[in-house]
Amino acid sequence: MANEPEFGWLKQMFPRGLYGRAALILFLPVVVVTLVVSVMFLQRHFEDVTQQMTDSMARELGFVSRRIERAENSAVALLAGQTIAAPLGLTLRLPAQADRQDQRLFYDFSGRIVIEVLRDRLPEVTAIDLATDDKRVDVTMNGKFGPYSLSFDRKRVSASNPHQLLVLMVFTSLLMSGIATIFLRNQLRPIRRLARAAEAYGKGRVEPYRPGGAIEIRSAGTAFLDMRNRLERQNEQRKMMLSGISHDLRTPLTRLRLGLSVLSPDLPPDDADISAMEADIEEMTRMVDAFLDYSRDSARESPAEEIEPFEFLRGIVSDAQRAGQDVSLSGTQGDASLVTCRPDMLRRALDNLIGNAVRYGTRAEIDVTLGPRSLRIGVEDDGPGIPDDAIETAMRPFTQLDSSRNRNSGQGAGLGLAIAADVARGHGGQLRLGRGSRLGGLRAEIVIPR
Image 1 (cartoon, helix red, strand yellow):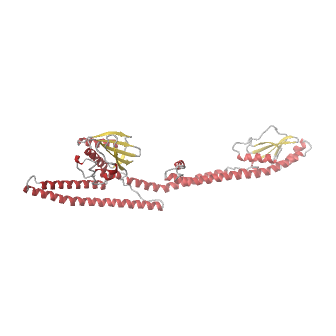
Image 2 (image 1 turned 90 degrees about the horizontal axis):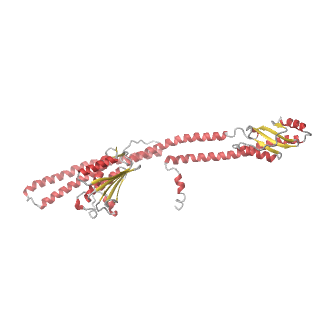
Image 3 (image 1 turned 90 degrees about the vertical axis):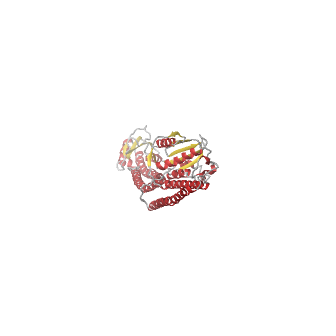
């Protein structure tokens, strides 16, 4: 762990995606092997082989040189030299230009070895020309009768077409890398499809998905489908349970209300017991309705739609103002692009947050920020707020924090924050609670990934 910050820069250089990392694992060995083979080939071919061939050629040049040195005059030297040079494939010129110097092309790697070996084996060499005609080698030597030159085919000191192996190796590496890239892309496509389906389901959308690819990827895809199907079955069971609760709880409450209406004419109008029982029935009805709304919104599968968030928030604020609530849209940030969400569920969550804000405070302000990766909607009030140690408790269903929120200002079932948190989680996001910086009260922020 101590060495992790030291090599953090190296970690940042590696690709973050699976495709990039798999490509690096696949292509890095190919590149390294190609480089190693190229270096070994250059060393063995351009140095060792060229040195051996040039050494043999130096012996032939030395043989011609010694025959010229033993001649009595220049004419005899020229005749003797040509007699020996012609069968050896050498071209003799006597005399030759004396003020020449070594020449070779800049990319002629084997030419450096040729010059070094010839000069080492033949001290009388004064110049070696490999550039004037890249297919011939012209060696100028200093003799008893003046400078002379011997030229021969370049193939005799270096292999012909030495680049063929390198070109073939590079071409083969590129071809196999292209084939491997296509194969790798086909293998990673099922993983990307699985990731998109899982990400969409985390945001509350069900996208069609069929397992494919390798055995391991198929197993992961099948496990994902089984998990998604189990969750869908649980939602269906919850809907059936809601219908039963709606029938089972509303019926006895209705009977109680009818029973009280029958008894009330025979009792005094100011009977405290009747008033208390009617209040209990109203409270129970309100609790049942709130529970049903909470469960129904959690289980209902409203279709996802693309909305323009700024106009969506302006509509919610306008509806709240018509209902007599002191609500305003304080600011919008970001571009007015579309966002995919469930408008009905998001509207109910915001209505609950606004209702809580104006119930426990005097006014509320809404702000929205649309970034490249998320949508942030904040609702802030000027009420007493919620202590930091009670935030997690406040988001539980049917929980009221009487000590921190003014219960005298309104009654509730304690489901507003729980519904908002469930809606945010249903969109793959979260609900954050904290202290507001503008009004000083509670700030509730819904964050939904894009």
